Image (cartoon, rainbow, N blue to C red; front, top):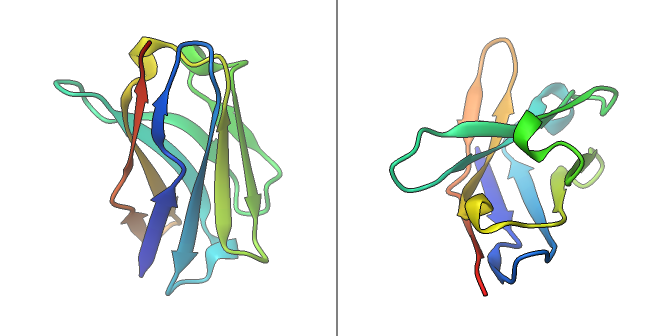
Length: 115
């Protein structure tokens, strides 16, 4: 099982990034997919989640309105579009796949917001 994130980097405040996560080794369409983030010294927190069929999405209140999570089950890929980025959004962003029995994590991608 692998989850491979990409798309992180350094961006100025107010900028945008699109993160991608490609899954392999499991039936992607049977898993809810989520993005989490963890800043130094902080707990890992959920920022967005999408149901296995894409029919339901939820976002962390602190980021509502600035995020869009989407998925393409044909490509085994989940995306996170982030707009209006702030310095406090700086963190490692992790992809997660979860169903009733299993829970998988990617290695993370660094997002840094700074001028």
